[in-house]
Length: 285
Image 1 (cartoon, rainbow, N blue to C red):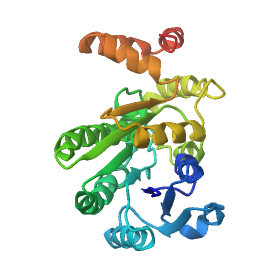
Image 2: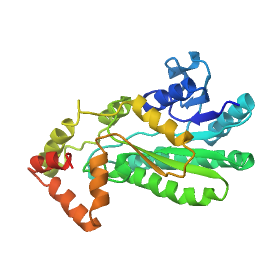
Image 3: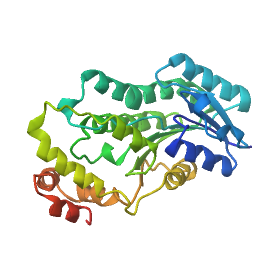
Image 4: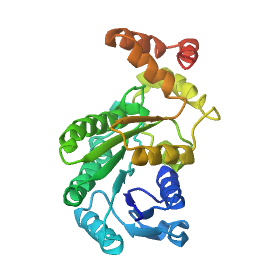
């Protein structure tokens, strides 16, 4: 019997690649997005059903889940992928944008999970896969709001995994590094900037140069992340976290290998002004 998955945020990037990959492996896929009119070819692929789901619209969530059950009989896996990255100095990000970041990345993910759990409990099994970020465990300047949302996803997912063990429902966390997709195009377009915050100018310019150095490196693609998500859905283990990207692995290893304050002190030294050489060294750990 074929298995079925529902994925949010499937219009592009990791979401689209994951929908395609699962379908290629013989799964039935419910590829959801806020505006199905923006679908770029998924609906024409065998085994993929495209439908509307806005993570901040409870009625659309319930309707999509029910449509999937009606079409396929059951849903075996939920991939919470919808999200975006608000970047910029914290002081430059207005409160309404902070709220919007959490509405999508945290509360939206919770809304979809809450709506799916009764179906999984009725089935006696299920898998919840939450796409977090390397920024859910290691942080850098200019990512305070985004990292906060992903730290929240990590804490929620870990605690939820212990609760749902009692229901034979597994929770998995995917932690991508930098993935060159339209996700970062949007992040660049929505980068928070306030010309009145002139005190930060030299620091911001140096950080911009540092992050620019990531481009063109040995990075994972959206298709690479899709394969990691598929492994999480099918490996039949209780593994909680899956790192998806060689760029984030050294930073996670550094965090895991040092006492907490030593790691914080080291990271602070990396992001001091004129610390580019130290930053380059940090990426080689």
